[in-house]
Image 1 (tube, rainbow, N blue to C red):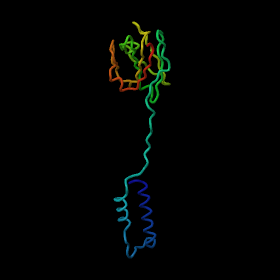
Image 2: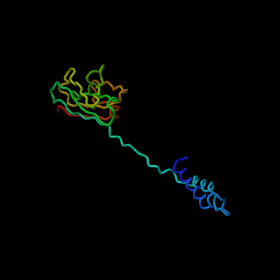
Image 3: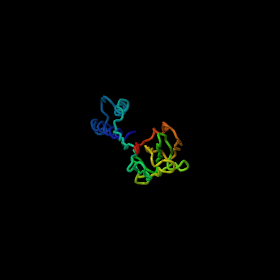
Image 4: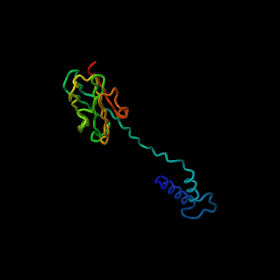
Length: 171
């Protein structure tokens, strides 16, 4: 039984006892306390106890530095909205209108995230990567295995189920 209802019933019982002569039976009770309690229980409205809904901030990923076209430097970024320990970043580059990745390497596709949410990834690992036209990073759950992409005109649609950031480098 809910505490508020229990307190209410105790008050009703106390009032019934008080109005009938401090424990003496009333000659003509109109409604006994048990009948009154039953009426209250069966007709009380649903609980109106306020519920607290904690609004979580959106899960986001953003670049903080993208090296310019022709540079051999990598990219850096930041994620927010969740515990970084539960996520990784996967990065892809578009070179000569074809997507490659994940970066830095197929056998090392995941970029770990620091406790403060920051991350960095080397994107120039061979070929003409320094002239990548575009760089995309996705914030993925730790247990997700990202798809490998080699000379594809588009990234796999499944990646877009996750937060992403994309930056143009070379035109």
